[in-house]
Length: 396
Image 1: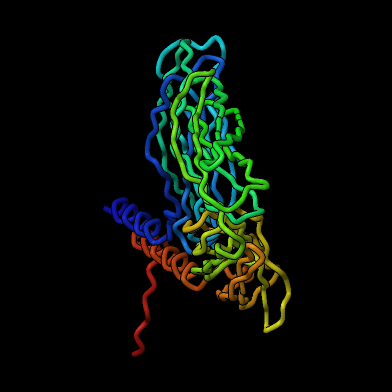
Image 2: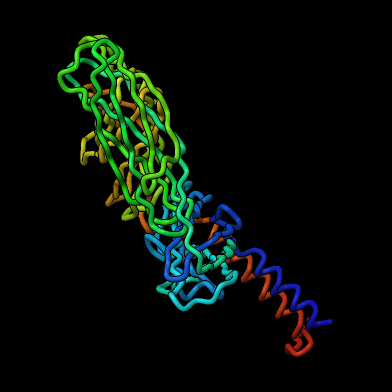
């Protein structure tokens, strides 16, 4: 009976410790077909930090396919609260691998620290994890194929450069080099201008092939485009499009900063991922980038910036900038988007930065204190008969 009571006390103490389930992983499983021996394939997963605190993540691949599977960009990383991180598994079976299906597990673990220090002693670090599954089918037969997902062009003004984009995916198991052939036809003169562009795609890779159109010196008007995508000289698909060249000033460069997203709480010394949602509401292809500033106590202490990204008309895209606060305080993040020579209005977000020792919160201390009391109470009850009996002498 005493042993049972003690066990219950210990279980209760453990249950009071705040375990963290700070991660998600998607998809849950992936089948990778027709991977060539000595070849290459790539599989993407998304790791999510669902908690309100910074978390450290480690990734391990376990199983028969693990020996020739690597993780990109890293097997360990740190994520800010409410963020996601894309990871890729690079699969490269050796040339002497036997045909067959090789399973593997993708183990993602997060380690969240309790209070950093109490009386100089480090407290427990609590880990949790989740697994994804992959099944790799290895073959020795070569497959050369691609899919063309989209072909797009955009109206331009006279004197500007036109672009056409082709999104292609390598659906085979060997390197593929699709070629885009574009013929621009002037309907009034029947003049044909031709341009070609090729790009190499690794197995399973998807990318956009950008083709610069020969629009220099062309007058305003409508031009026909005949687009063909070839693979090893064989036509995979073709499409007819209309290229409009307008007079200067007819197209507009317009954009909208939809929102600024930053985690409300973060520890000093950790990176913050500031997201700016931008929409190209104009009719011109534009390049958008974050420009902004960080304020503390009303004073500008740093600037925000991001790499320029092309945004098509009507497209909505999330731009990101990283910032690393060095000390605790209440920060204001002011961000705008620079696009096509114009700039949106500033939008603000509040960032609360705590010192690293603030991780030892009152709630954490309470959990551990109650757990300790329960254990001591259980031990005391279990060994109560072995304690010396103390009697009070009654006065006469």
